[in-house]
Image (cartoon, rainbow, N blue to C red):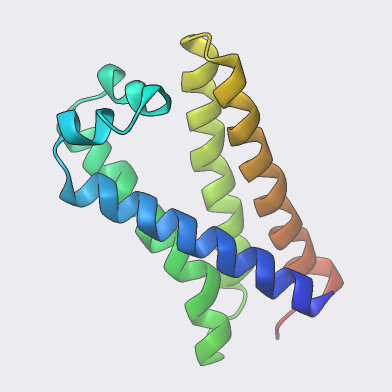
Length: 127
């Protein structure tokens, strides 16, 4: 189970890091041009998008760094819970925009992050 948790955590951390850095470094227009799945940025200002990107980068660091450094390992499942809240906000935006097919992706992320949180709180705690 520990191996599965590490694999899922690494995949999530990589994805959230790439997504967050993209939001931090690209203009709103360039980020939107990635495709229809990124048109949610129309509902937010530039500063809000940058803030979401920073939260994603910090959350992804929280998924792996405490475990790798063996410092405050309780932050790993807490970071997963925090990123679940971010994705709940994303899902709410998808719901409001009636983007049902993209909402399924957000729900998948919530499920995977929930698996990491549950796994690190109860199944295979790091500490």
